[in-house]
Image 1: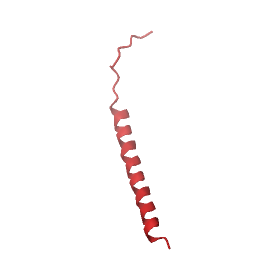
Image 2: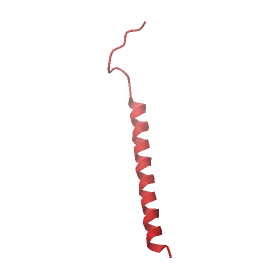
Image 3: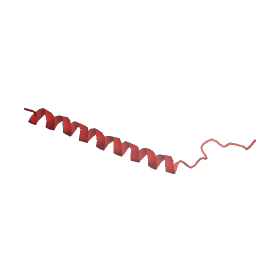
Length: 44
């Protein structure tokens, strides 16, 4: 079995994917809040 050294894995791609997911989630949340505020103000 191959030797495993803790902390030697390259996680660059995982970090970029996670950062993109967090950015996308934040934007979706802001748009959702904006839509709710718009509906609360202009709903007759």
